[in-house]
Amino acid sequence: MAFTGQDYEKVLKTISIERANKLGIIVLIPIFVFFTGIHVFLWRNNMLDYFRIDFSPMKILRDGFLFFIAFLIGIILHELIHGISFALFAKQGFHSIRFGILKQSLTPYCHCTEPLQIKHYLFGALTPAIILGLGPAIAGLVIGKYWVTLLGIVFVASAIGDFMIVRLLWEEKPTDYAQDHPSEAGCFVFRKR
Image 1: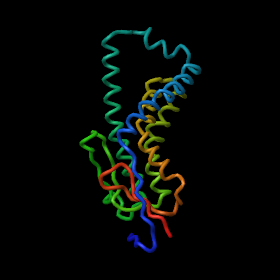
Image 2: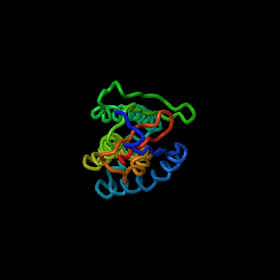
Image 3: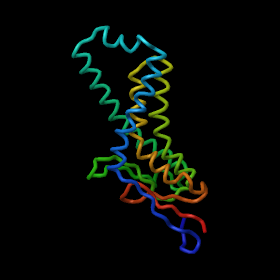
Image 4: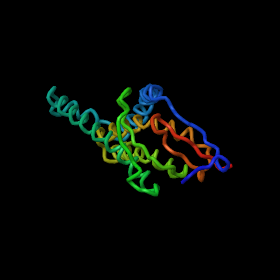
């Protein structure tokens, strides 16, 4: 879709990756306290059982390694979910999706090369936080497995950049358009005049 100067106003909306990373660490604390508090309330002794049953340094190392692998896989899935969500609404589908890593901050990204209506852009921005973050955090509370809740906590906090972009776009008209910036975290908004 072509946006001509007389029909649309073009506005740049970006976030700082450094600020997002710092904010993610700060936000992790209340999210951790909130979900861990609920987990302890619901499952009391279940969390302490981890340290009482077969507790050993090897178990801690093994579980820490498995958690790290799950985290790495989750990072890949996070970007893939962005891509799939954006592709659902892109005219060229998955042909409009690019993946990469910002070298200066080692931050993985998913980039949609074509403009999407803001309501669709917001859907694509929030989907990974819901599927990988809130979903596991709540599932862990329901089934009583804290490591599932903990993964959810980590992926809610790791989506802070997505939440920051959603905040930038929240008051835009849902039927206007957003297009990913080619080299920065954020997008161009095309507002209908």
